[in-house]
View 1 (tube, rainbow, N blue to C red):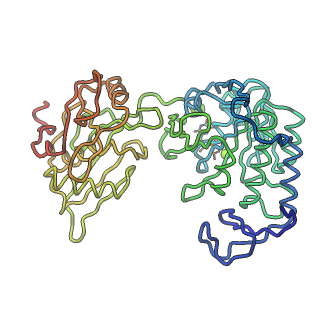
View 2: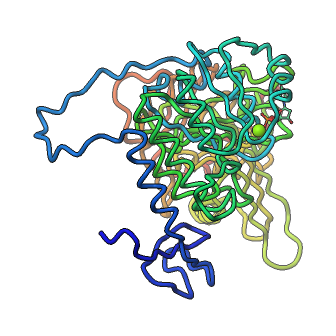
View 3: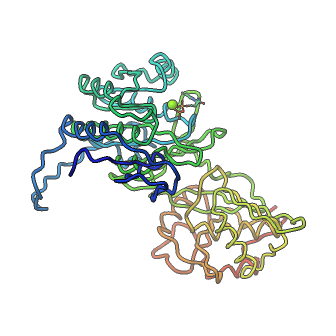
Length: 455
Ligand code: TYD
Ligand code: MG
């Protein structure tokens, strides 16, 4: 490879080219491609040698690859451990992303407080004093925590070399810069360069590393592609700042199941595991509410789907979806009308998932249709009943994955029956179940009750 050849990089997405181009072929941005000065390349090469990346040994036969037991160190925060797949592994690089104010620094400090051994907590966002005040408030004053308010990645690495911590935390990767790179802090090449240096150090020394990453308005991490490839685990911290609960989700995990979900509540004393289930409002049954169980990784979560069907004004009726995909809602409305006999064509439809969870699992389809039917007719659904099943265009109810696990969770939360797909259940279910072949039964109003009947 010619070391000093000129390289051009897209400042928007980080794609590299041997020539300057007007438009980036990877992300489509215009005028975003700039020449990378030679120093970046030299500096990356140097980083490789300085932090002892393995000597090149040539290919190794598979059987002779040595596999050490991956000892997992639990973090002591139960919900976090669940999302990490049981704890941290030596040299594991974790990226914690989330919107400003969601609680990333709080989680970091609580994690640091429970860690065994020295922790180096480097912050480019807050002063040592600010962090200490927060630690006091959280009761997280672990004397093993060492604070460093610094934005120069070389200084952080020098401090880490000196301190030899058993956990390195950096808040946040976007505030760091490497004096050897010519672009400004927060640019794609700085973010990547700094993350690469830190990750190499983590791998070479077997030290777990946690990087905090900011999320842009559209929900993606700044320099997303570059960071996601560099790290082992991507955790997304979500939730509505106006609600107490916060969701921690593993978007990628080389050491465990992806899409695992942790649920915290934000209190005056920091983050605590959420009590009960924030996604199911266990109130009196009302028309338009249906319960279902969605899977997040291995975690079954009971959620309440709420629908409101109201008469539309003039023009095209509205279909508004919060927490489920809008296209899917449009399809389910059509299926409910044609196959389930629920009149919707001249009505506005609003569907919301209680508690702010994003539901991607199609097994919630049947519950959406049941909620629509319930709201349209003003009747309530059979009480304490779950609705599980993916619904196709012909109105058929299709099997869902891990049905027994979902029913178990429902039974645990006090549900007494479930409408499930006709196919797919083996063995004895945890709840009395009614197998449904299609949404036709809704026309027969089998699941709908007059409110007075209940009273
Ligand atoms: P923070 O961890 O600073 O968010 P981030 O690092 O993601 O920007 O947390 C910010 C919010 O959390 C802030 O609005 C106050 C709130 N908070 C609590 O409610 N209780 C607490 O104990 C702490 C430390 C913060
Ligand atoms: Mg912060």
